[in-house]
Amino acid sequence: MPLSQETKDAVIQVAAENGLDAEALLAIVQVESGGSAFSTVKGEAKPLILYEYHVFYRYPGLTVAQRSEAVRRNLASRRWGEIKYAKTQSARYAQLERAITVNEQAAYAACSWGVGQVLGEHAEWLGYGTPKALAEEAMSGARGQVNVMLSFIKKRHLIDELNSHNWRAFARAYNGSGAVDDYSAKMAAAYRSIAGHASTPAPSATLRMGQKGDDVAALQRLLRGQGYSLFVDGDFGPATRRQVTIFQKENELVADGIVGPVTMARLEALSGQPSRTDGGV
Image 1: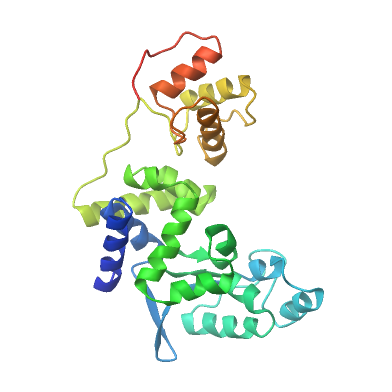
Image 2 (image 1 turned 180 degrees about the horizontal axis):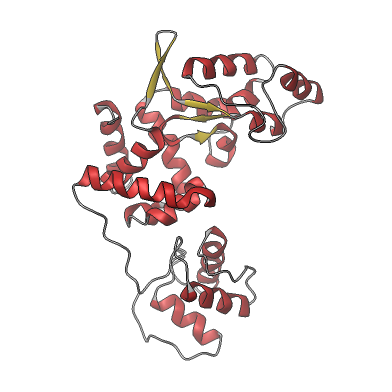
């Protein structure tokens, strides 16, 4: 299902204001939302939500009595998957309303919101203060939904991955490691449909999140040799990027989490290995 013009306009406006590739952001929104930003619930246009029972259960503001009450009413579970998701948006909003009667903030925290499907429990981390405030932003309209999504993209430091069309890296950090292939393929296909051409892959001279192989393993060994804590598994994930960024900051380099020739040259020099490059970016 294609995005509505209202949603497209909101995405394009947010992209322009933040220096983002609008077509890339549209592709992400298309995949995350399935093409729908709103559903009609009780005659009103509401952002799409997904109620997560295990997130309600773990909300730190719950009392023991509230947690027990939520479990009794089938609104909370200790583990993901113990209770099936409600199939319709009307049913999910009914769950939200019932959960609010137990603990308002936990109820909003337990829902993923809008085109970015951002969990309300991330509200404080994203700067919204409370889950209800994040939910209110998402419920304010298409622009509000995109704002919430962008706040998550920024907090995850995924602007470069979005603008460079590094779908695998983006999916790894945004959706988790369990569905990288599926989500990255969908994002690439959505971008191709929107832009009318395939993405241009990132230059092979750099190592960045989403890549795998011997070069990544060699990088990880170099970092470990300098005292940085991470596994050598040949998978450039969030943990490797975090350690790369720390290394770059400590060595007064551009701290973007991307290993280009300058970063690699500094790392190899400190490791006592011959540099494979004598300059670049």
